[in-house]
Image 1 (cartoon, helix red, strand yellow):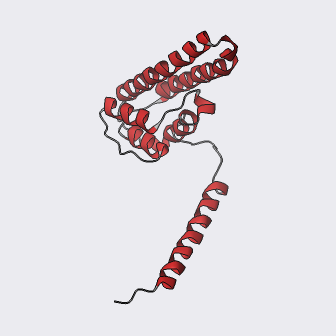
Image 2 (spheres, rainbow, N blue to C red):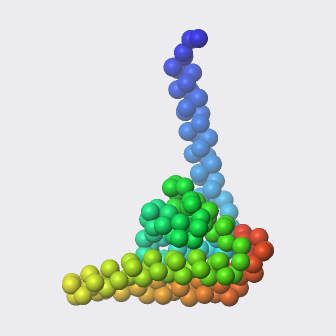
Image 3 (cartoon, rainbow, N blue to C red):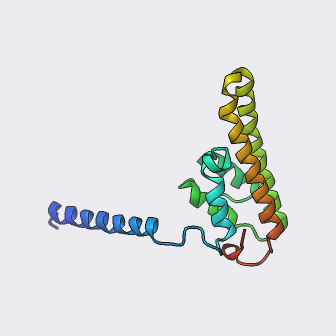
Length: 159
């Protein structure tokens, strides 16, 4: 069997071009959060970016949340890990339990922020907005919990 490095290189370049076109479409195509966004997408959009949630959930944090919830998720992209955990939710009680686990992890992080602000008082402004963002996230989770209908396809739930 003869190995042609040029052919492999061409195939690789072809795959890279194709992937680049798909990423461009995924970034430009779509409906930018129009109505009908499911609660999974809403939580991914609001929980994962620290600028929106006030906390950073690492892959390890998501793994721990999943294990405490009873869902052993693989370590991979954070968005996919959170989606895998949320897809395991089948009832309002399970969603409430998941949100309490997420809130407990967030409380641990916020306790660190408060401790840093105590030791370094001039840094309070940095941590204050993070704590406020987390309060807003908790209010969103309460609205999702209120509107949740168990048994329905989760991707079609409105937030």
